[in-house]
Image 1: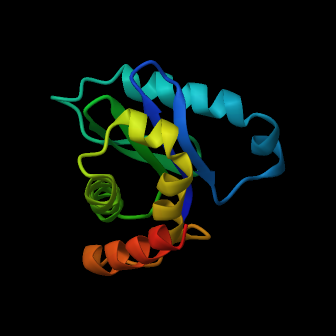
Image 2: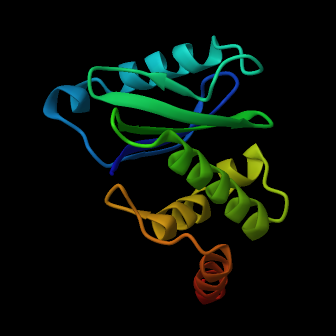
Length: 147
């Protein structure tokens, strides 16, 4: 059970956050193309009548959720359980929302280092490290005070 990548992009396809955990040599050279393909695939789906899960490649499926104007996407293995990752996307957004106080795209753009700090507290090396919202917010507020 490992996350291959986490992406966040807006409705226009502009990437706001990206973290690659598993990256083969061939994918490393074409990460931009992969992100464009993911955006095209997800943005063309009917979000009211289709699921938040879609197969992307021979070894990867996408789990995604749209919040306001942002798409949050995780690339996971084909055998992994999608609802688990969907719940972690939701937790990530909840933590961002609590940390920033009603998070929006501009918060992520101008405070990207804090958004990555949140991501790094939750996910390390493609593995889920912490699932307690209270614990995450406590750690994040401590690190934020150190600035």
